[in-house]
Image 1 (cartoon, rainbow, N blue to C red):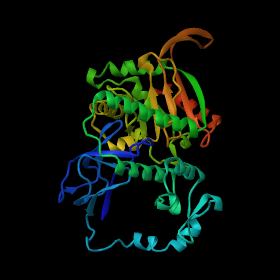
Image 2: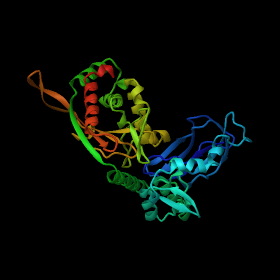
Image 3: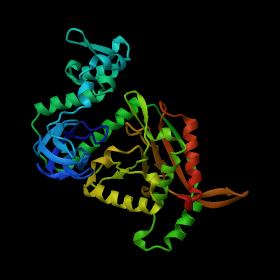
Image 4: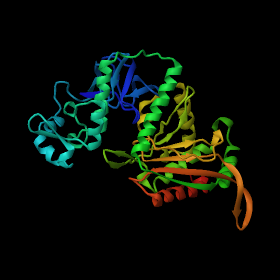
Length: 398
């Protein structure tokens, strides 16, 4: 039996409201099907299912507010007998005496005593947060390695307590309230980022003459609806540059870096009601430029129309913010946790540039990198920016 849970749609989400079920008990679903709609501070999100089978039970009513990780539905998976209990998970859960010595790697002061003798690991950071939020760690089930209690576990427990104490808010809220809440959510995430992540910043100027010349020639052969914007070149070049410095395509989870095998570039998109989100273009490095452009258009349109998918919000491995269209020459972004890097793209400006000993006018772009010093350093960051520059000198290879 598979559990369909309230997904965590970004590091700043702890609670979501189930606004609508798109499936009923008895319906057959396949991996990737939209099963529900969830309202978050950033809008309504279409949530996919990641297990194929038959919906056996819906556990949460529409309009109910629940914490991240809450089981929303049970799905009887294809080819699995409903009467057969899980044979893999049960032994693991029944043998804490084997798992505990391996999992407890923190010193004794990072542990708490539950009952008479059972000891559970908890980091100092999670313990402090528990005190701040009034959560008793002894009542929290740890989801970290070996059952360790994490900050996310404490936040989830606090959100659950708040959800039980406060009646569910109406599904429909004034646009002004949502805009305010979006700003508050973004502020909370960025405050956490600046507080916890040791940022370092690099920038470089890139001659875009070859890229724009190639783009102009390529677009002259295309219908208007199929033309490629330079933003698509940037996204593809960023994705390919990560192959040179893969540690930037990662997340920071439970005190360690987790390298990601797929490159899902997040694109910062401004919302009409205010605020922004950064959904992912999945496997950007493997797309053709045509696919990048088509999927970028689709992603922007769906995001602003409020029909974004949950995987697009939860999957970005790095984010690109482009403020060139707003006339900004350079932007130094704040990393969105748990990601470890952000790329900033400014306006293309014609500037004097030395070419072959002569000063000529050239279209110049400023690209910046904000990165996590726990994961990389300025040397590795400079290799990434050099790779980005080189790729934009050979646009036909993208």
